[in-house]
Length: 474
Image (cartoon, rainbow, N blue to C red; front, top):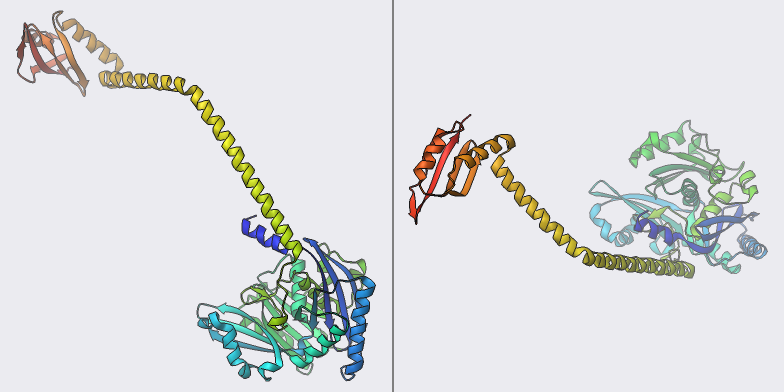
């Protein structure tokens, strides 16, 4: 594990309680999750019916009472709550910008907002997902929620003393659940979500939501309409359709279009071995619980569906209300402890290294005289080897005979100052009473031929200095 991977993993360690709240037209689903260091556990779940949207006063009261009762009876810490809403409550718009707009994308979207959505800019909460298409195009998926529709739910939660830190959609919450169960965001996945209003086709690529289309019930009556929409969106997003994992989920029973069996449908079973949850969650889960669980995972900072090239998670809450990325005190303490332990480990390693270095230095000082003596002997051996090589030239037996011959032929009153035997040629330098007698003696030997002086002889006292050469006879 690299230092960067370790830092990312430590950033996810925490001691948090998270509350996921999914609200649709008929019910509210609640999920309470906890994180202790790296272990995530789903502790409590519940589903409560709600009056219809045509009874706003009763609906608000019922929603507040359901959340308050759930939090009180299960002793849930509600400071980290995420609200999840159906796809039908949102408006989406897909637009392509030049890649140069990437640096000022928020400002560009603010300028283009009135053209992209049918509501005024100040009447919506929005977020967007962006990714590069090639080198010169930037794809932006703009997602918006009417402020009035969101405020109804926020006011009801405030009646229960709950202030959500983020707002997500059912599809992104389910995608977060899938990514958690799969051990991280994969390259891409497709998701079909059936609800009362129709079936949503959502695509996630590289951890980012890149497409979302809600097909109304009327359009689904045509044979193959859902398959054609899915294939068209996959092609538009340049995703490999053959290798694309496809999942499906039905949010309600009996009151919505049924999702045809196109992908993996038992999403709850994917959590076995990955999500620590009560047995009843895996045995008889309510369909509305899955987006609530995904929202709870967001609340404990385990969401992986991100926007803006992975900078942060999807959140339709206005900027001033977002606190989803702030680290807790426990995380800060844990990181401080890790840093302190790392410093201690590095310091101890440096101390041990210095002690070893001193031991080696002291040992070297003890053996230094012996080392110098060995080096002197080695140098002497090397020098003798060089001299032997010069004399032998790789032919020890023959050179020995030649040296014996020269020793025999050189008179007793002469001596040599230089002898060189190389490449079949002998050169001698020295002093003798009669240098010509040495020429004559070498010339009579069967081992030498063409004996001659290589320079004139010179008289030094009673001797002559000579330099001669001879060829070695074969």
